[in-house]
Length: 217
Image 1 (cartoon, rainbow, N blue to C red):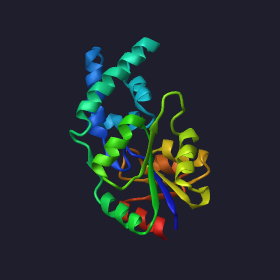
Image 2: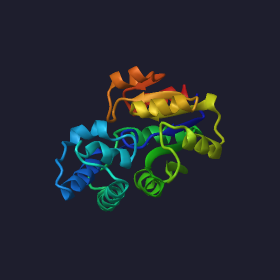
Image 3: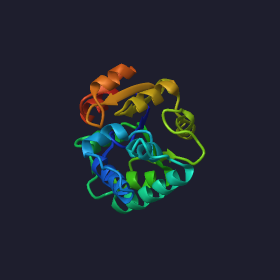
Image 4: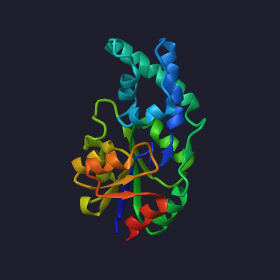
């Protein structure tokens, strides 16, 4: 049994893809750039908003510090206003989390979303479930760097051998490895089994019920 579980957010706890794609495509439109299909965003997201905006920018555009700051301001404005238009919880996840909470598992969220936005989003869809939510902080590296992971574990009182990190992408498996944790990949998110296997996930689960069984075994 794992006594501590740390979850990724986008693609793991919440299906945020359509809202992220809509906000980013809106930014592209403001600059006359080509937009991208929603499906393409499965590979664009995962490393935080600054990297997302870098990935959608045309190759011939010079991303100066001023332009990067402007893009982030535009994205934050649009996404904040429309972050819940189409975002949903994954089927079975609320029930799985209820089982874990009842069993006394300590749970937290680590995401590359800005810290100020992460907590309210988690609380909106999972009220009272996660007492600790850690998002990106200015001046500190984001996942897969383990800096914020270690800070979060310290707050939780978690020990590596009893902690499972759960996410849907190679970034999450890298984060687990960098933090000395067991990593579990989920198949209902944005990335593929092949990516998770190639990154060396310790476990891969197909649905939230299977995840709960793994944690409580």
